[in-house]
Image 1: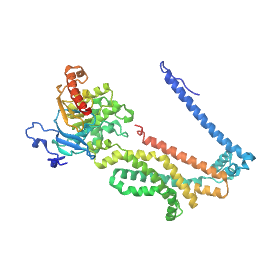
Image 2: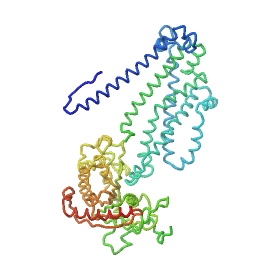
Image 3: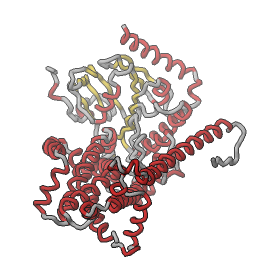
Image 4: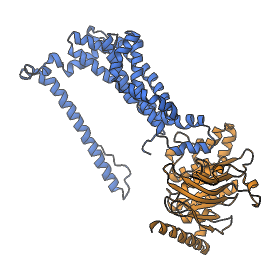
Length: 287
Length: 277
């Protein structure tokens, strides 16, 4: 435990004690989490080596579940081209491109639509039923329709991720616009704001904050939709790599691709969150 | 609703011409005003109220008596369902009214300066003019070092000061205050009373204050109105006799203050009793 005691003044004993307890609890949690992870990885690595298990259970056969060390080693192979392996970058590029374009366009459209509908009772009444209807359709069912309409192209993948991201973002943005306290717009009105100024100077920043709050979800959905359409179309990308590894029964590669997707998702979310914190430093929803 | 003078509902008549007997035209005048919610609930019942330039009015009454509704009517955020609400002439180029709400209205993404400049942004006034004005306003309430601070970095008391400056920056003829200091502790509140009184007198802004705090009503106003329980009627009027120059902190110890406080309180107590019986 690393509780640094600095400048402890008389009468701060209880504060210090509380901090120590807090640090202790945190260390406990962290150690517990590492133990769970280690136990999982050891079980994954070792159990399939024991014939008693691997012969009885499919999911403990190394042929099907691979192993953590094999996956880690393969990950380095495909990232660097080591051991004469192909590299993964030509697969990452189209997936990332379609996801990011879909993410940005879907978020902009969702945010703008959320602002317009939350700002206009007429537009809201007019369009809401259609949006509810579209939203009720399982998103995955839309993918083949778009593929038929746009062909098995990168364009189709972008359209799909725009569609899916749009709905994730729109509801949040709409709710954000609805949540602006009435007194905020009334105060602006009494200070001489015109209706258009209330929309842009009062409503829009709230909608922006709520739009960006849906960012982590939107990233997940963007990647999911692109990979799914790659699996369906056979277009070049990480989804195609999954199909490939499946058809060659290469479990290690399937897992490696999944790990790669997780890493990409994490990086995009972290970068986006860092940007969001800068733009929305004033945003404290609890207040 | 079959009101005899329903044709005058919400009319913006010139008080100076409709009532030639009055020496000074009122800024805003309620004549026999009713307000009924869409639900049919009657909130205000035949309210008469005259706000003259330089005469601050405080309104108090039991909870739910329609005080805030009265203020929203004065602000023009809603219109009477019966009776007449008249507004006096607003000098050319002057700002008619601002309001300080009970809850925070600061925009969290704007700095202190940005919030105070809101009116001028809406009106597209030149930046240099606004910057100079803000430089003059901030020291009035001791915020000179906080120009670039964001609301989340300020205490509640400071946020209220910013909201006050934002409301008075356009030099409104009328400032409506809806329990604006109820979230503050007593010393902070009284200090702010003094600032509000001094600054609004300097700018020639008249106050209409809605409050539960009788000491606040007595300190800031020239006349205190006590409303009855719902539907709110004007049940009592009390003239405050402290004049313009007031020491808000010191006056609380004076006989006059205690006497007027007691007078308003006993009136209010009767109205609350009426509610219970």
